[in-house]
Length: 581
Image (cartoon, rainbow, N blue to C red; front, side, top):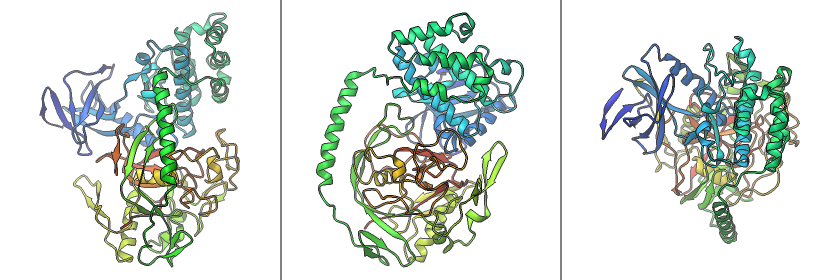
């Protein structure tokens, strides 16, 4: 819907209610759609608005693609591999999607890049494809134009081939796809290998069929001091159908020997100086013992925790400053950014258990629900490969974000507190939730609060010890094997009773494992500027989940995922928070 004109641009409104100012000229012109570098009127952030060239129903393929992306972008594993769709709508009878604005696709990014930089992006692209396959999804049309490259080499996949549509690109499509077979993971592996061949060899992937092509690429990589085994792995994927039906492990192992590209040494040096300064400040701040307020009414002090008769245990998290996000060379959507939290808060020592949930809602979601896995598959929440997920002392999972905020308001009323959340049902049937920051009731932590707490209230990372020492994650005990388990043993195959592993520096347990945890924020890009008490974007189709779970490989305290607020999963739970006063 067009709602007005702003300067030379047109303002359109998405289904979420947010408005976007679209410029007069498109940034990219594709065969089926135009892509504009637009601006979200509500918060000023740049977004990509992809508009179908043809009106409905000819442009309905874009809506099918939106549904595909929205379903898989919400998946805890596949989500980090795909460009997220924040909104959609119709402009002059043509459907449009609203996505992250990313600087370039791979075919534009590659110009002027050296081999080391290209190999770093190759490794990021391989991991994105692996994530997609681990989740059970298939892209179907991997090629340079469908790979978005952000700052610091972050990679996201664009424009999947929607099931039922025969989208493919000659030169990058596997022979079996050209022969009419449907898209499968093996065909994705061929397309990935063809894309990486194009990226590293500076020639079309069809040239791999000439004699000695693999040796020529190996010599090119060796001359640049890079692992020549990458050429052998690519050559095998492109030539041998049986090879690409297996996995990408040999290619991943070959890429693992590649050095990380450092194209801006001055920035790297400055980052080191800033890191040293942050560590020194952290040591000074860490040497002080912040005053801990008295326990909330109804709780009693017990060895650093506040304990309620119903078993709830709280830990105090003091205000502080830290650099949120992934400090690695390819941070993805966890972009590093400074955060200042000005108010302390209480946080549950462990995740809310199935027993505590039952005190307000006897429906027993773990025992009675099913979750959708995608592609028409679903499973019960109660067990996984014969392992029981039920138990009063295990985290409650299979609860949606909307159910959680309603449960927290019920807990506030039971404790004689003012509920935090207000829920309204709009004309389109969507439930809108607002937060009263002055209310004294129970709530979810914000994304920034959660990460500060997960770091143990420390400005630096959590140290060199593996995450699986302090978190129940996917490791050698996994009841089924994807080939991506962590090389450690936390003692639990699936969902574990709360509090069984080591606490962090604040006494909080299971922050990075057992169950992913809902937080307040709408899922969106992290700002690159300093933020004070951030609460996330105003609108968007997904809410953020933080941490890790029994079915996730270990990741750092910056790990973030997205899911629709009305969906549930047997890897997602929550813990209570409350502003300290």
